[in-house]
Image 1 (cartoon, rainbow, N blue to C red):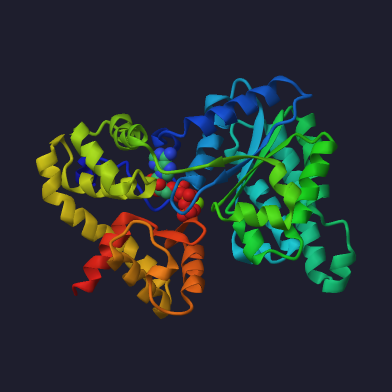
Image 2 (cartoon, rainbow, N blue to C red):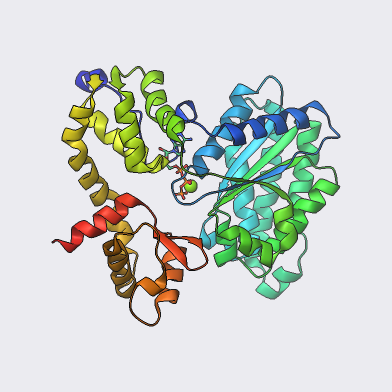
Length: 396
Ligand SMILES: Nc1ncnc2c1ncn2[C@@H]1O[C@H](COP(=O)(O)OP(=O)(O)OP(=O)(O)O)[C@@H](O)[C@H]1O
Ligand SMILES: [Mg+2]
């Protein structure tokens, strides 16, 4: 045990959201969030702007939500009394409106205590409401589906409307509801789910309930949402998370080291190399840094030392990420991926690959986020390291 305690901590972690204290970059969206909260906290007549955080896999959507919570409950705790909930969507909870509502309410009743520092009265209020929600759930389970459809009582709108009234009476200025991975409503949601949610959000706002909704999802959902429920997209201020620029990469590398006091210095040349290798993608930076810290825990990481471990870093990434990515492709799709990598071009189109049904396969690989659609008929592999991995398989 004592040996464990003496070991240098490794602050990098790529398999989940980053801790708010290590969160790097993203000033634009964080500043907007702060301003939004400040304005809404400053005047009861200012309605908060809802926010949509869009970005592809591993770019930092969930991390951003965690950072928002940290801003609300730590950084700005003296200027606003906020309540927040982080609700992660999954296909199974999107299939039915009742299930969706009761899971969201469940999340609220479970997370109220982490919305610190909430006054005890708020806790009491939520416990009280949770009892009612629980009763709804029991009633609705015992009802036939037909009767359930007719029963208006169990609705998100009613529950959130009532909840707001009580929160307001307990001195809460604003309630922030974050829905992570909203695309499951589009791919697996009940019919009309987006319309229903839109109507509820609009009605709550019109009724004076001070909710700020934050949703996240991959970039491709926005045009689809726009088509499905056009006014839905108008309800949100949209932000797209993209790869870090060089200074963002530098912060993502150095901040965790500094904050947790790891005596390892990464030279600017190495930062630049990591930036080139990862293209500033947060997931790749975190996973490469985690590996580096397993090898070097102190001193200077020079370009020479880095060069010596580069191969090892890439082959670990290949084992932990690219293999899984490759495996989600069907056999026909795998063939396309291999051929695309072999082209050796950054940007290519279905016509570069021989065969008939290529556009469809390209489309499907785009949905799986293995190919990125740049414009009509133009694609690239989702990351150059993935291309490198695919090419290395050819040789085997
Ligand atoms: N702003 C940031 N600062 C530092 N590291 C970050 C940041 N954003 C993301 N990361 C790193 O990238 C990884 C992926 O982040 P996160 O899980 O938040 O992405 P996501 O967009 O929610 O991914 P998914 O599409 O899988 O849900 C995290 O493990 C974290 O290490
Ligand atoms: Mg996420």
